[in-house]
Length: 228
Image (cartoon, rainbow, N blue to C red; front, side, top):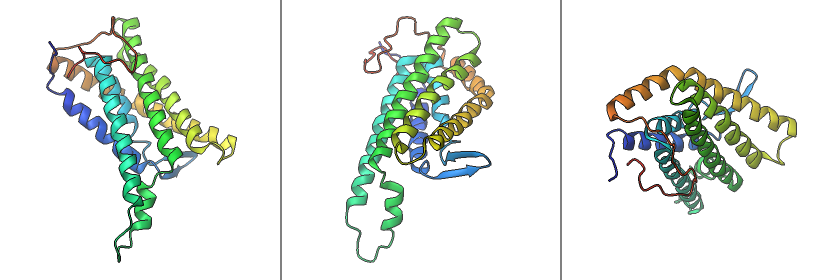
C-alpha cells in the first residue's frame, strides 16, 4: 500500500514553481564584480536543495517523480510560450516585442535548459542516495555538498555548451561555466544549516528516513512503491 505524506505534495509544488520562475528570469545575464551569472543564479539552486530534501527524507523515488513533473512543466512552459508569441497581436497592443523577448525562447536555449535540468537533477539525486548508503545516514553535509558538486557540474556545463556553443569564445564559455558553478556550489554550502533544519523537521513530522538500498535508479523506471 502506498504511503501518503503530509508535506510531500506541497514541497513538490514549490519545487516546480521555483523551477518555472527560474526559467523566466534566467535569460538575463548579470555582472556582479568578476562574476558573470544569470538572473536565476540565486533562485535555481533552491531546486537542488529541494532535490536533496526529497532524496534524503522520502527517497530517490519521490525525487524522481518531482524531477519528471518539473521537466514536463518546463516543457509545457516553453511550448505554450512559443505558441503565445506566434499568435498575432491584437491591433493597438504594443507589447509584442517585450513579450517575445521573455517567452520567445530560442530553441537551443529551451533544449539546453531541459536537457541540463534533467541530467543535473538526476545526477544530484543519484549521488545523494548513494552517499547516504555509503555513510550509513551520517554526515548529511557530505551528501548535500557532494551531490551539488556533481549535479551542478553537469547542469552548468551542459546548459552553457548547448545554449552558447558557436556564439561565444571558448574562453568566455569556460568563464561562464566556472562563474555559475562557483556561485551555485557556494549557495548550497551556505544553505547547509537551513537544509539540516528542514530535513530534521520533516523526518520527525513525517516519521520517515528513507534508505535506497534496493532502489532501481533508472530515471525512466516507475517505482510503484514511491512516496505520494
